[in-house]
Image (cartoon, rainbow, N blue to C red; front, top):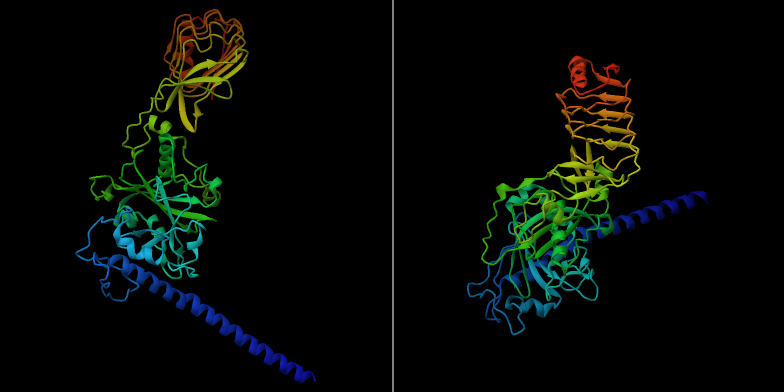
Length: 506
């Protein structure tokens, strides 16, 4: 009995294994061979219809050779084809036959020199219908290229977004799109053709970017946005795109332009999207792009997941107007003018006030906290993500700080103004940092409570008249060892107490 059971079990397992093997083989045959073959035939059929349009609608499409794996499908329109010919509804006549097959067609996308040469669909009853259906509406893992639900060719949208699968198994749809991560690939294919039902257009690529499919992880950037009702909103959108571009494209953009985005999945991080962005060719503009001027950027802005996976930190990221004011935008050729940041004042969280004096320096103005008793003038500060060197001190910076007891200059300030601390009668301790070169006249005059001075700078060469007259009688002064003799002489000439005690710094 046991032997019979074992024999039956072996037979059952053998048959089950064979059935499983056959089932898997049939599935793989369908998935990897039959369905891709069907997909290619469907696309070939409608590609031939699109490219063979003639004014004579009864004409038969020209025959063509079978498409090979190594070359793009290429059929030239008939010589009688009348470019931009439209019907009474404004629809280009070359789409007339395709509309008869499927009225969901919205245009045709081609990237010359690649296999990306497909109809673009849009189903208003289900935005992602063509993600898994072919041109004829049949279930197909390759899907179709299709317009995002936020995009419209009828209005038309300022930004048109086309989605498509990155089909590694069949090399169809947007399989070649991630190749744009290589600068050389961009340089060979800088122009896209996307003709909608209503308009023939060529588009110059302006950006290759990686974003997250989860919009909240893109630093408040929703690349699917189709319409912009304020010019500044669109300019900020362009700024977001350019900030994320892997390389600089030598193509200008402005608020009057229209955009085209090609979006597909890629695998640099979870839910990553590769997006190629182009702007429509302007009226009378040449198709030529000086791709030799393109270069890889070092300050690319990525989604948060990128930094979690690969390390690094995001670059300065503010707004279009701010970046324009600081001279950081070299791709804009519109009429927007941004006021210079020089002269603008900012109050930081620590209540200290600074004024921008150049694109990378600021002046310390003072504090809005009159009761502050300890104050550090830092080497540098951050304003809106930018780092500025603190190089100056306003002459009246300390005028209202009557409670100040300790002050320290950490680094970049070179000059202490005349009469700087005349109101700071409670000041007891001062540290003058590494770059101090000049101490103004009467800078610490009549500050009788001043008991400690530390000078770390080795560049001090001027101390003004009466700068230290009537300071503490037994004041302690720490000086660089190599400067002890010369600094002591300068201090004595500036009125320092003859009872001062000098200490050497290492």
